[in-house]
Image (cartoon, rainbow, N blue to C red; front, side, top):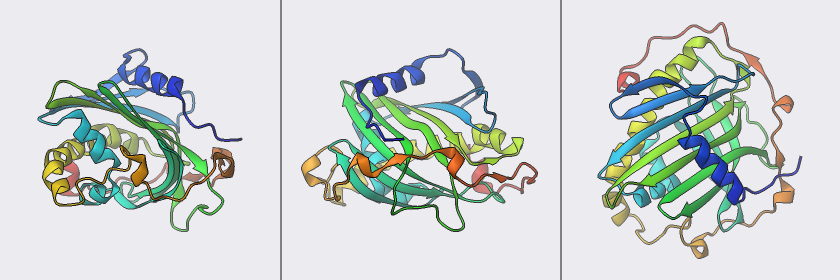
Length: 260
């Protein structure tokens, strides 16, 4: 299927999902982080939503942190590798991301189309999986599928903001129940707090690292090669390997997993 670059209605729909309580069940609420899940007909595809209030962090700073791949390498300890593949429009690109799954599961990776939009006091970033002919599935990774993943950042004044994260991912495999519970109770909240802590430190870091370079805000700075949406197709889950990890037992968590 051909790829459609998100328009205003897609961003509006994503924002509504982030803010609406309908159909969501609270699974975790502690230390400023709230986690909700939503039951899906397909039990392997989990829908997860999280929120954190970020005191002393402007919405614009959060937006920069989530875009800045150079800085992401400083704080995203789950990330194995990330790189940009090409530019679609002034506010859409294609990129690669791989991440460490809870041991002993196999690691996952994604090729996604990402779009972003500042809208008044709101900032939105959304992505979904696509196929690029030069970036097929890699050995030693399970190519997962992002059906819809993204962030909504809302300004709560000059130096306070609220961050929502919503994701619906097909991990391409039957996962054990402990994985789902661990994501909502440990991995997800920890990731949100990492973003918050990273955002507190970002202004000082950025002042020392190309402070005026922000291609997500200034398109003329974007040096990526141009690619066409016609070069891409939607990543259909049926075309990817599906593995059964439902019988995998949970290994003892390392101490950093308990930092919630």
